[in-house]
Amino acid sequence: MGMRSSVLWKWMSAVLSAPACCSSRYGLSLLSCYGFFVAYALRVNLSVAMVDMLNNTDASGNTSKSVCPAHSSPARPIYNHTASVYDWDSETQGWILGSFFYGYILTQIPGGYLARKYGAKWLLGLGILGTVVFTLLTPVAADLGAGYLIAVRVLEGIGEGVTFPAMHAMWAFWAPPMERSRLLTIAYTGAQLGTVVALPLSAQICFYLDWTWVFYIFGIVGIVWFILWALLVSNTPSTHPRITEQERLYITSSLNKELTLSGDHIPWGSILTSMPLWAIVVAHFSYNWTFYTLLTLLPTYMSDVLGFSIKENGALSALPYIGCGLLAVLGGQLADYLRENCFYRTVVVRKAFSLVGMIGPAVFIVAAGYTGCNYILAVAFLSISSSLGGIVASGFNINHLDIAPSYAGILLGITNSFATIPGMVGPVIARALTKNNTIEEWQTVFYISAGINLFGAVFYTVFGQGVVQPWAVHNPHSHGN
Image (cartoon, one colour):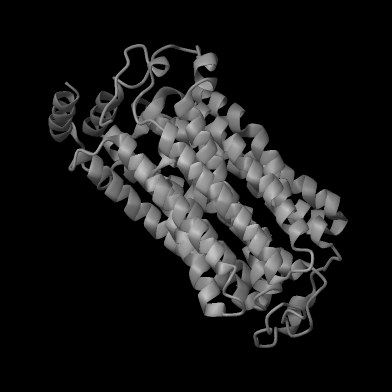
């Protein structure tokens, strides 16, 4: 029966499918990609700017104290020494880098609920706009003191916390089941692109201008995105003024068996006792521990251990995320191909991609700790670690839409709340463990990340599911499971 319904669905898709080129759904995906580019650029630029905000560099811009021999770097332009520098110890640095996530965790579940109730467009748009505004205020806050900077970063996190839950809620209305992996990986690859561009560009801005311009330039880029988002995006295909009738019918007909019309009723009891949801929670938490460790502390590791100057630091810190973005997009294409053309069950694809995307990074992050001062090998292993992590974009990362599309935003809010904890405590723990910045101390940080990653991979493999859960729809229906 399952195979016959799957074949029937494929025949209906062939009849009703709308072209991808110039379509509204792929337009939404690309603009969402730009949005997450902005979100992550604003999130990570402080990691690079922090290196230049601290009073620990000499006049040439070379790191004056690192485990490995410092690399030579050209002398900086004289006019870039106008910005303030601060005497923050490693503990204060950890709190500043982690403070974003204290705000970020507060709006995860409310973001999913509000997006489902009122629509995702303005919630997501205003959330990122709020982050943009507080990013522009960052230099002023830093001058006032570390406490003010922490407060501004918390407020940035509050604004950005609604982004992923709201986006998942929007995709519940926009993403046909057999195109989910493709559409969502294109959208969410903006996170990697934002990291890839922001890290080296922030370093160049610090080198040629000063660190304050990092926040001004990326803030302007964010304002441009908000204007485009406000003008071009609609909450659903039915309310989109420029969508073709063919595409609207294709999307709505492909989703009508999966979306519940239960109004405001949310089965909280069933949601919170759902083991497939908790499998995603554990996997998301575990993966993010490694991800956020690298995201927030890699520039510091490059500077304090490997001895790279600010100009080199950003480009090398970005390398791991180039592969991550590429594998995320390619993985999305492969995942949907395996489900649609090779008839692999959704749960098999999600678990396989999650295993590769979690065990691979664990192995290579540990290996990076044993490269000593072999700069090429260290950067290579860290790059491979993050690159393999991109594969989870087609694994547990979009599994919410498989098990409960009607409540996908709320589910992502729940899982992302737990997955934000590593961003809150990871940098603080890591900096507490690396007070002397020895290679051995950093090995401990990498071992902790790898161990948590492996546990999450095993837990998700045992308890993950790929079908719409009975509590998620009045007429339980699963497709491609």
